Length: 59
Image (cartoon, rainbow, N blue to C red; front, side, top):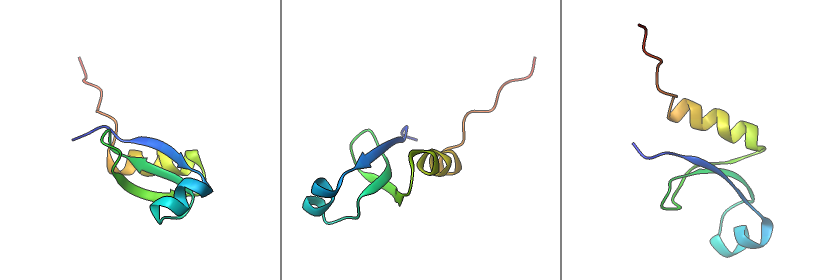
């Protein structure tokens, strides 16, 4: 699975792309996976739902 990152899309770029401005979870390729979210924190929470952090190994 690809790593997702939060990215803020401002109004001018949103108009050009035909999307709402806000925070989006994106792939390394730039493909939008989820959004728009109201804040970076909301976006990061969604990324954690989609792609949970790896479980720590017990020794």
